Amino acid sequence: MRSSHRLPFVGLFFLFFPHFGPFVQCIGHSPSSANVSEILNSFQIGYDRRVRPNYGGIPVTVGVTLYILSIGDLSEKFMDFTFDMYFRQFWTDPRLAFDKQPNLDKLVVGAEYIKLIWVPDTFFVNEKTALFHQATTENQFLRIMHTGEILRSMRLTIKATCPMNLAHFPMDHQMCTVEIESFGYTMSDLKYAWNSGETSVQMSPDVALPQFNVLGHRQRLVEVSLTSGNYSRLLADVLFTRSMGYYMIQVCCSIDFLSRY
Image (tube, rainbow, N blue to C red; front, side, top):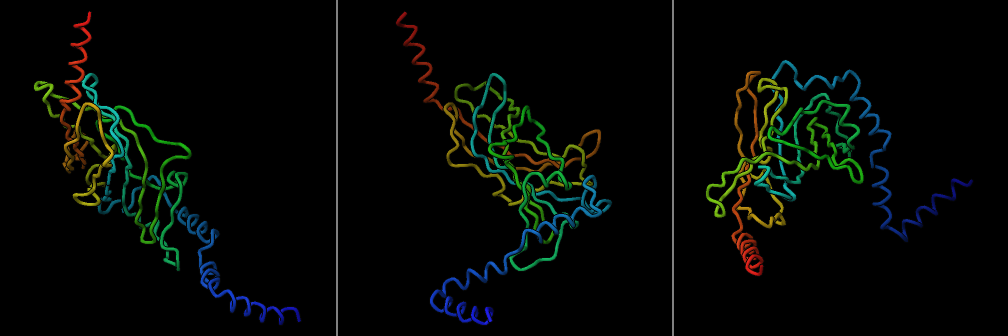
């Protein structure tokens, strides 16, 4: 008898509050956390993170994009520059594909799951030091599409070498380069590409330095031959010109100081 009286009450509720209907339907069709956990756990059955996708077959193509947030220093003394960026890598691993479901065509997971799957052994060839940001948590995530397409995004601060020619100081131009390559995989196993074409390298409009003006940037793809094989390498060049205003202020202040004493 109790259940027979509930139906009229539910009907009257939605009659007076019809806007709750889509909300309830949305809840009913949302993927459960148990289902997502089941998919993630199924990936590990027979999966060997030591083996690259398509092992023995075509090489893995790793797409890369950079978004430079800031450039903190450009040092003539140490011949290096420091920059903060979002570094994103894209590749496909068929072993991580899953059946598409309503409202569930991708999985976004945290940094802890990255340790369970194969990832490219990317490194920065001219890096001096690198900082992985961890406040308030490790600043990286993984997105897995139902097709097996993978995105790994992270925030990094890199200090890299930048050889400078100071022959025309203080009216000089300098070009600093970020070099990206696989540490162990030759081109027969892994190839890099700029994922978004000519717009793969972007820079925040807020980037500014006191001593230099940023003229622009470009991107390149080269093949490097080493004793261990041929490697695919990406290069992102940033062009700087010295700010004469800053230099003149420093010179004038020095002259004024010396003239007083």
